[in-house]
Image 1 (tube, rainbow, N blue to C red):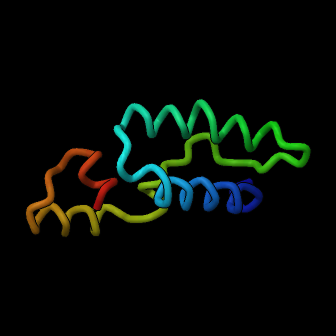
Image 2: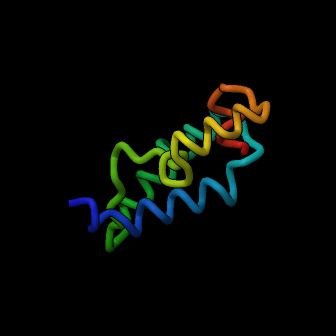
Length: 83
């Protein structure tokens, strides 16, 4: 059920925005999948997270990304994440 994972999804998304902005894509992915997700699932009271969570999809939609690209933002994912 998606609603039961909303708090965990928002927690990871805000952590992504707050802490991962200046790291490389590889390190961002390593922290998300190798550190943060396992940590949340191992807590005494686990915080459920959608296994397919994409912070970029939580924060924006295709129309926003298209508008940014029309204004000159490169089309690669890293540029979109940084925007």
